[in-house]
Amino acid sequence: MAKEHITETLDLGVTDPSKTAEARQDRHFEGKLDWIVFGFTSLLAIAFVLWGFLNQASLASSASSAQSWVILNFGWFFVLTSTLFVVFVLWLAASRYGRVPLGRDGEQPEFRTVSWVAMMFSAGMGIGLMFFGVAEPLSHYVSPPPGSATGQTSEAMQVAMATTLFHWTLHPWAMYAIVGLVIAYGTFRRGRSQLISAAFRPLIGKHANGPLGRLIDMMAIFATLFGSAASLGLGALQIAGGLEYNGWIESPGKLFYISIITLLTIAFVTSAVSGIGKGIQWLSNTNMVLALVLAVFVFMVGPTLLMLNLLPTSLGIYIKMLPEMMARTNASGGEQMNSWLAGWTVFYWAWWISWTPFVGMFIARISRGRTIRQFVTGVLLVPSLVSLVWFTIFGGAAIDAVREGAFQLTNGAVNSNHALYQLLDSYPLASATSVLVMILVGIFFVSGADAASLVMGTLSEHGTTAPSRRTVIFWGALTGTVAAIMLAIGDPRDPGEALTGLQNLTIVVALPFVVVMVLLCLALYRDLRKDPMMLRHLRGNELIEKAVLYGAVKHGEEFYIVVQEKKASVKAATEAEVTGS
Image (cartoon, rainbow, N blue to C red; front, side):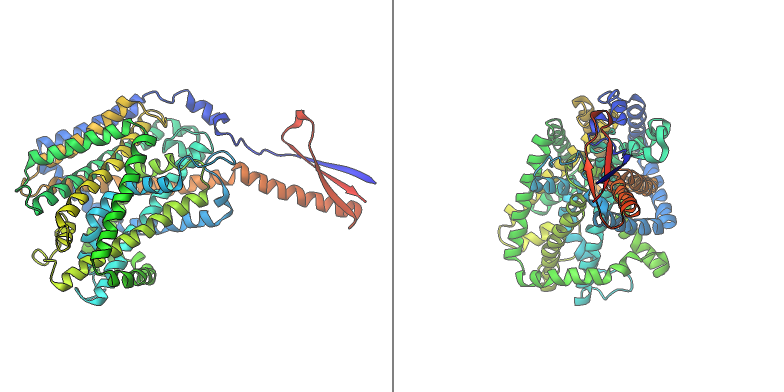
């Protein structure tokens, strides 16, 4: 028997992220305050607050002009990239990269699946579903997108549901998934710090630790601060709207809004400093149960048969209209379409992107141990299915109420602050369910805002997964201050005016983040090509092929391949022995 050896040395990489060179480098700074990132960002935020306090009209005008410019000139870019993000994450999940774990090989998920889904859903869009669950489908039913249908018809109902699902399902969650995947992979697989700048190392190398990297992290903090402050203002408006609609208060003023914001800020800061396992997880699980109770109640007392029929209809018309909705730009409908896009689709894409730093980083923080395929399935598909059911129940019930005359429009339009309360007012137990809605809004905001404050703390302390309490409290308090001041300096008769200016600022910040996210996709792809699992698969195939060819040349068809362990001095070697029989 002839025995010959072929020996190849494999660079399989390090599967323990704590032992990588990047981990050793980052561990030196972890937990220490980055005074450059923290100082510049906090000063900029305070400057904006002072600008708004000293000259609110100037701030509002500048923000509105900047937002209009962004939407007019870069609306197409938002539309194009949002769809590319969906395609990219679906491709990752379906490809061989889907098997790659976000952690060590064989590592188990940190959180149970139910808690994982609940936490990311609360952080991602919980408060938005409460605010727009009735308002958006009803708005599109009354005033459909230009050229699509006639208002308040059966066709308009289908278009309304498809358009709403377009704004709330695959596209926003794909944006969150991009940032979440990049951070989770870099942190738990490669051992990098939990910074957005660290994800750029495959592209810019050591410059990710320099001024360019710090600029990226400052942009992330800035977007997170103003995005969460706008959400806080939105929650305050809806809670006050519920109290006012039910006659429990009259014409809430500045002091009342500040009181609500103060209470919510204290609540989410307390939750944040208690840690993810204790605070956010408990709140998210509680809110999932309460939201389920509310949805089941409306399903039972509302037009149940209509909702059941609307569920497959909404899904079908969404799939049918998806290519058309993805292609809507200024060129498809002139000035009327431009105005509609500015108020809806492009506004939403910019708004979601402005949330990606904190939602994506938070999702990454809670996704350790899952594979890329599991991550994409959970982040992209599960919340989309929940949104489908939620909007079918509440949107269908609201449209039916308008048809039956039980829901009165305000001058032919929908009052977003009161819409959900108006719907519940037509059902039994209106007072009790209104209180439940206000509790849900409060908890949804708290579970999202404490995630935001933790992420800002992480970005301020070189990517530590456990930022110090004082840093978390600072960012939480500043978030509440930004929201309170912006509402306090607004018109008491229109407290949403200052909030609109705040939203405009987040949209402006979103534009450079679109470019950042495109580059993150490229960085992740480069990383995955060099993942230890991919290298083992690739080099293993190469060695087998080489051994087979060598055996065929030396021994014809009569040979077999044996793999033996080498001596300890050559641990990384894989030996293929070709033995002729």
